[in-house]
Length: 325
Image (cartoon, rainbow, N blue to C red; front, side):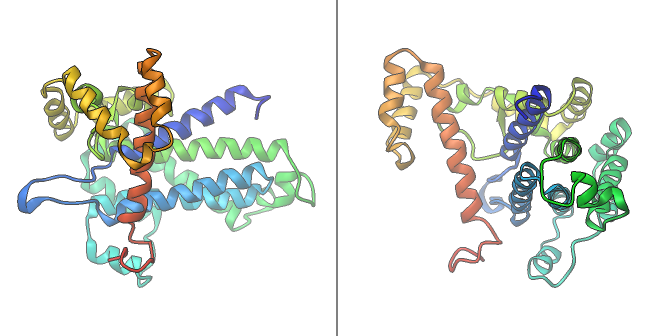
């Protein structure tokens, strides 16, 4: 990978942008009796991420065909997550969670998503998303079902033993990028705040919303998953969403935090347990005038902690006593 810088760069940008996308999912919303917390199907995305991790590890170890199996599962679970967010059918989800029903077919899920959401119709018109997803899923399925010699371990490795193969890793990186990009297209359209860059630090300092909003840097990272042409088309779809525009305008209309409020926010933040081992380093950054570096460090730590907390406390797949409801 080090000798193929362009491919490595594309993969790094795709993975970084994909990681930021998860923060566009609303976690807490509503007021009073209508107050809602994270939906259980949110965690299908977390489950899918583990398949992606497996796919990358297997690819780098020379288990190309096994990597593609995990990639297909990643794609399928992402589509199922989008389907669940669109349908909001808690009864069917509980049946699926308890193993009483199968995951619907990818083609059926895409059709139902498109029927219910106008933004997905636009995605299909602009980028043939439904057709591309079905084509990729079929291609990955060919490796699972060993559809001919070209889908075998031996063909991918040009060897009867587990070994590095330029053909295998080239095929793998191409499929990896296509899969991440198509999954991310659907995600962004379902959560159009993915393309709404907001001045979160200016409005919330070190106490930003737990989810549902991205700052300018995060949106740029998301955009870098795609080519400029694809990114532009996705941007047009997301910025045409009235609900997203209303939410974005609400944040932008808030008063900026004063210097005193920012200082108090930082002080409270650094007293929390997650900064027990890094507080001194952060204060030294500030002392040396490295404010941007300190802010970036604190923000990255908060996001990592929030992702970890969400992955455990609200996870319907988690079997530990007292956590699964």
